Length: 239
Image 1 (tube, one colour):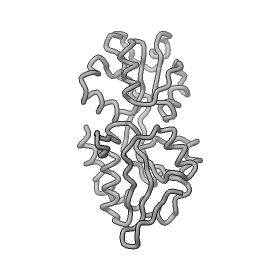
Image 2 (cartoon, rainbow, N blue to C red):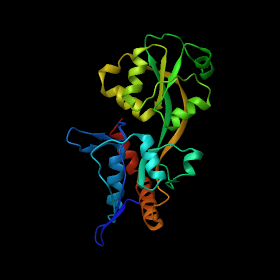
Image 3 (tube, rainbow, N blue to C red):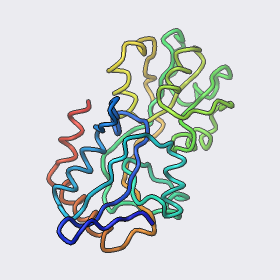
Image 4 (cartoon, rainbow, N blue to C red):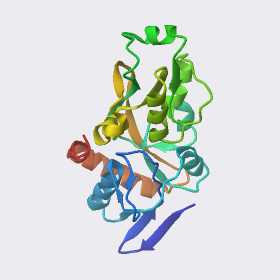
């Protein structure tokens, strides 16, 4: 179990991991981290100086992150959607972090006026993708969308598939899609479809091996910073 006490004065460190998904987590060439979740970690640490989160300088695939949390090799992750199966394997924070939607992007070369989810399902030429192992990926299958064998690990891969073929549709959370498409001109050939698959919340998740006293402190700090609208102010930096 990777929870390291630092000292009586400094409190305890909680191991975490960064997924390659801006603007939640971003690493520069020197491995310095920034992003929404980095700022949330910092706000929790400021609210309760006894808490400290680890600072990895590399990315970890999301399936590996969840597996590590499930098996007690990692203690916390920021920015996970809720599903019942995952909730049996790990703990969710007592308050959510922020609201997101599952949006869809497609090439501008596709001029079909999709005005409903059923219209998308009725177009047999369309293929739908999301990052494997995420709640959005499971949602596509559950809703009956046509999914084929591409294995997507990153947002960039998904956007690349969508821009390459006008019949490819990429689904992802609104936060990441809007940020990526606003920051890079290479995605100018993509457009948002005027539909949302769902509106939901991102949460922090924790290993069931995390000590209750430590979990309680993190949850209390989260409630405090959310009540003070600190998370809301963090989000405005990345819009």
